[in-house]
Image (cartoon, rainbow, N blue to C red; front, side, top):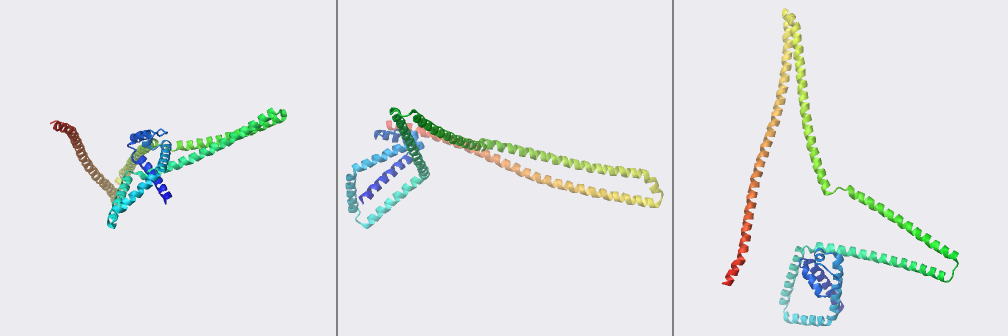
Length: 372
């Protein structure tokens, strides 16, 4: 039971420490002065506390936890005695079950308020980020230890080889075997160097490929430029398309006019050449009347077709006029709202300046009243 109490105390102090570092970042200068008063051996700046730099905060936190452990070990008996006395006082003060129930409800309300404050301060995301950074720090420390152990092993191996070669030299060993050993060591070292160069080249190729991929990804400014350019191209394409449709419509109208003029010319030529022969007998006159009626019928059909086109264009024009009127009304409403917004902003600025002047004048009035 006592061991569980100590574990609970230790976890409580650690949690309290991290909550203090997260919740009181604004009071970072005070934390820095408190660490100086505690004679902390690790330097910690206010900016490190505010930005939660794990490389600077973690050694200080570890020293504080060890300091708390030492403090708990020194004052453990006093805390046990104090807890026992507090428990006896609590039992004697709240012997009534109703009072105990009210006390528990009060404690639960305070805990809920504390949880609300923590959630309002958005500590959860910061704690998760800090936990991830601590995990990555542990992984990096493990890698560092592995690298150090590998370096120590290589160093001991090289020292053993050097000692072996020195022993051979001191023992007047055969120069041929000594040269063979040296050649063997040099060949092994060259092979390791070659493998290291290969690995370095592979890593450089990988780095270059990643860098090329990063360069292929456009930045935010480039995306904005591409968007502006695409919008300009779209506007140009729409303008060219509108002009092309206009040219095609003009060409079709001119082609139709040409056909009508050719028909009129051929009709006039035929009338000029055959009019005297047609009016000389009855059959010719009837034939002339029939051909003239057919021409009139074709002209009426053409006229009806042109009128239908004019009516369609008129409907399109009316629709565009309605849209223009709606857009103009919307623009007028927007302008009126913009003017109202500007007036409200000016009024807000004026009220704000008046409030600031009144707040600045209030301390002077208080000082005058106090002097009186």
